[in-house]
Image (cartoon, rainbow, N blue to C red; front, side):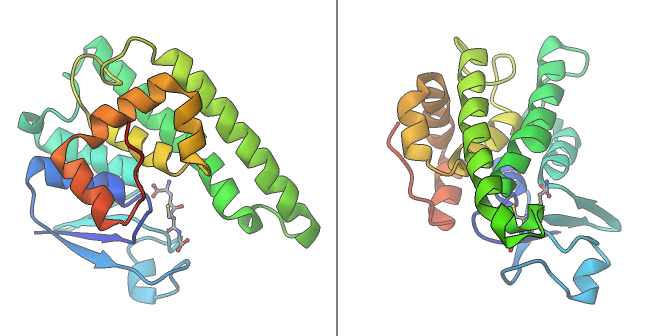
Length: 209
Ligand SMILES: N[C@@H](CCC(=O)N[C@@H](CS)C(=O)NCC(=O)O)C(=O)O
């Protein structure tokens, strides 16, 4: 059985839904709030953040990497497009873009104190993160016009990550009202029973889309 270290309303939601969709059994270990200083956990993930997956002797960190690892391990679940297809390249692009461009914006907004060592800088870091978040989701909205799912014609881990990042926007009800394509796609993703169950478990106030 897998062991997933996570906490509510964090990136651990991504591998959690991936495992639920696959039907994989896992033990979910809820970590205390804050960056972990527990030496046993730091031996698994040195930065003390979540999530971490323990897959036998194999330890995988980074929510998106864990989801990609699982998608490749269970091809029948079709959570990754076929190798060599255009949709597969779209999948790499979206997984990396959402993880490396959008998620840091979320982190700048939630934890502005992580990004400056001056008390007077905190407000500015957060203000610019919120502006960047609005710009990013407006760009994303244009980019996904006409898409049923993010990558090709099937639901993948990129859609799971998309929904998680969208619900981490600092004012997602307002963002969904502005960005109609984003709202429509999030609506399709959250209609999936495993996603709906996860959102409920994490006590996220969903918007009817
Ligand atoms: N890109 C990293 C992000 C890791 C990260 O920032 N984790 C946050 C939650 S999303 C965390 O552990 N924060 C500790 C806390 O605030 O309690 C990943 O997906 O693993």
